[in-house]
Length: 139
Image 1 (cartoon, rainbow, N blue to C red):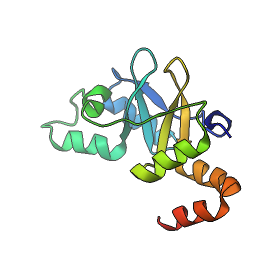
Image 2 (image 1 turned 120 degrees about the vertical axis):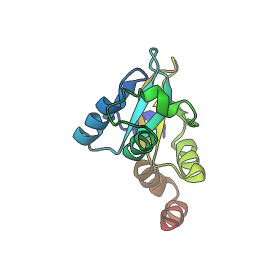
Image 3 (image 1 turned 90 degrees about the horizontal axis):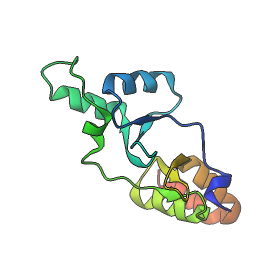
Image 4 (image 1 turned 180 degrees about the vertical axis):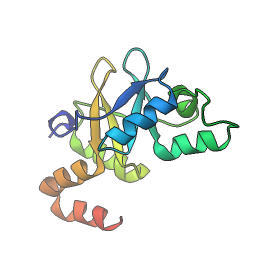
């Protein structure tokens, strides 16, 4: 089964030029706890959480400073997978790296959705019932 068959396409993203105040507003309106940061070509650059925003502002003299999304993700490692990859690839990356989700890109390197830990475990349960339950029990 391919990732594109199970990925979540309803996920917040923003450009690297988006201010952190706007990212915070996006997070408050969203059902998700993160926003994927994209470059102008829709390539994922990183992921921002509320905690990331709080950390940036904790080192600032003012909470009104116009930090950009790029300020947060520039030193963070980003992982992603291809929409045509097998679901087991995403599940392994999510499990091995302790991720909550994994951005998905298409053949043009454009962001098209995310594969969540719960989606990958649920799909693996259909493929390898014993293995996915043992992975889920770790958390």
